[in-house]
Length: 414
Image (cartoon, rainbow, N blue to C red; front, side, top):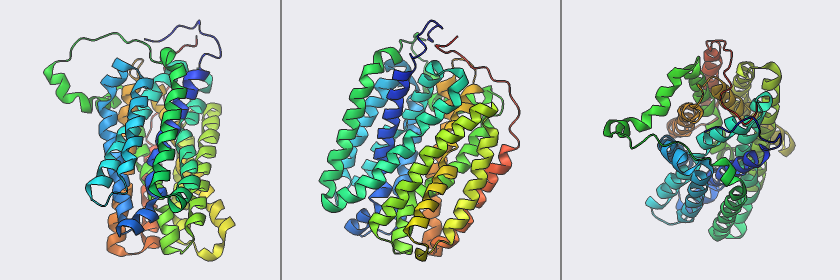
């Protein structure tokens, strides 16, 4: 149920702040896997490919829980749903250092449980509360919480796991989850509006519930193609997130702290890119041109990273990391905003979940496929160069997205 246009002009700030903080905390926990990857490799004697597999498993888990979360979001409210999932995923991180293969698998699944529902739940809130003239920017601001969480993880977790072990990592991630949950509680009553009950679902409806968000992509112009573009761009972004630190430390021989700084620069670039791309999309009135810029930049990022050398120096590598983040992650909020504005009224959370399924599938296939290719070829540069084909496909697909006059849907703004 949407609110009317009688809301105060500043009424959107509390709900938007709450979902940004929850998204940032969920991303911080998700990025605990790649940022502590070299320590895990040393602790368990893994190959560098294992980190990619764990990231892929976490994102596969995210897809399942995201698709299954629609009923919980409508029944309990988007904020409450994300709060519970976030606390469970933070608790699961404590299993990671145990010397059994089931422990990291369970951790990856629980991280996905915490991360998956955040995007469709937040899209539901932002479509209702954000001013239409600033909607692309606010969606991008919310998505900027993902690289912001990565910045914090890249700066803090390598240092914590080195100096304080896994107890320090677990304590900090738990504190972040609890703090985000308490802050979001202030806005929960306003954000988690009661929804009309549609009655008990039939047995047949229960069986197809997981695919319903994907099927809703047929309800708006260009939604399936936009979802595919997002999936391709996510492949590249997922590889950078999962393997950058391992590539810098293992292949280029950089210190763990330097690699963490480059990773943080990449995440900071993603934060800046999402805000900048969101602002540009609002000025243009469409996000398609911005998505094309991101695709072209991702092609260049993969090619330049494939020829990187330690002799370039820390400053240049940090600059490269920031650039990769701007173009490789700046597209996400704009794409979600474009999905939302092409969605039928009342179906934003469903279409957001359906489109995000393709994005998360890219985050699964990217690290897993890169890990398999790396295991076969044994060469980071060769696999990175080959990666450029995927954003090239995204760029080609973007030119088939039809023009569309948006139906903004319900909002607290007149």
